[in-house]
Image 1 (cartoon, rainbow, N blue to C red):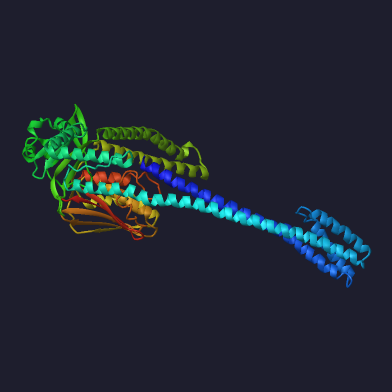
Image 2: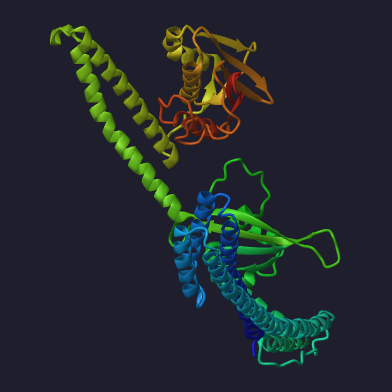
Length: 572
């Protein structure tokens, strides 16, 4: 029998017996209560009424009206409480005698008759009390008997569970624990001998099967290792991403078919060879293993594979182990994984081309709108009132904003597709700054913001595209003017440091939360809570322009203290 079945039967039977014990106890307690209540209600009350009538009968001569009323009241209560055999006849006789006494209150013979009738009623109830007391006593004895019987059965069942159940559960566990310790001590011949048809029997069979397989494993570990090696090789070869495994000395341990395909080599020419040596004749392997300083932006690798250009992202996984009994981990090699992201790049190109096409198509109707606005502004077209002029000005601002957005989208699509041309040459930084200031001068004057230039003397020329660099500086100044309060100051600071020229734009605006400073150069990102008047592309395009000129771009800011946007370009 299963252990679970035994537990269910034992505990279930005990539960049922406890319920029976509770029901028996409740039944007899209720019976005893009912018997005692019958004595009180049916007999004791009658004795009380009889006593009151006897007392009032003795006082009839002294205060007749009052005692007659008391007697009559108790007689009525007695008539309503007739419960025993013969009590009704005695009560009727009493009622007749009392009616006669009311007519002749001095008749002592009637009083004696009334006393006899009352005594007869009391006698009947006294006998009834004795009988009911005997019945209650027998009920209590029966209750003791049945409760003792059921309680004894509950005790026997509980005692049986207490004695047998722990041993049935604990003994097999002890034996199994001892066998597990033997297995841990590499005694794989150990077996568990209890084979009952229950859960422990199933556990014993599983344990013995495990011990047998461990015994086989210990005697044929080389075969097992070979089998596992083959399985891992099959798994790696069937992966769709190129994978190359190296040991800590740079020797190639394994390479899957996808990696061999893009390298144009065979397995025999790669496995067991030094990766550094092979890199001398294989450009792809050279780009994978040469240690280079990774830039902050991870660029995908372009590899010609499957008859087309494919894009991969390199991931190097360092493999370490902790030898048994030691605290330090040791390096045992690396695994280079090339994740194929071609499909994502193709989707990105499709998105970029779509944006470029839509932006290009939008420029024509926007130009038409601007031309129509210029015609509306001319007096020859007709006189316009103030409301019409305000509408024309609003349409003009919206069309200029829409034209700016389409221009930014076109610039971004050109950057992503690599179609934008940079004219990098020697550029005068002062000319770049002056050009940018002239472009935003009107905006600054509208908010009464002062533009202050701080530069070192004899600034060197920089290697830059003057137009694109000025565009970035204009973008910095436009943002600074937008978020600076009126009557404030914006500083344009230029200095040379570490063979680079640093352009800085510092405002006294609300500043940027540290959580968002590393995201402001992302495409379409706008700081939560800011005025969303743009597309979120200006800083992203600025970053692309600067990085395309081998420069760096960044921001330093504190909430409430303003921001400093900067970019660095190499000097000539």
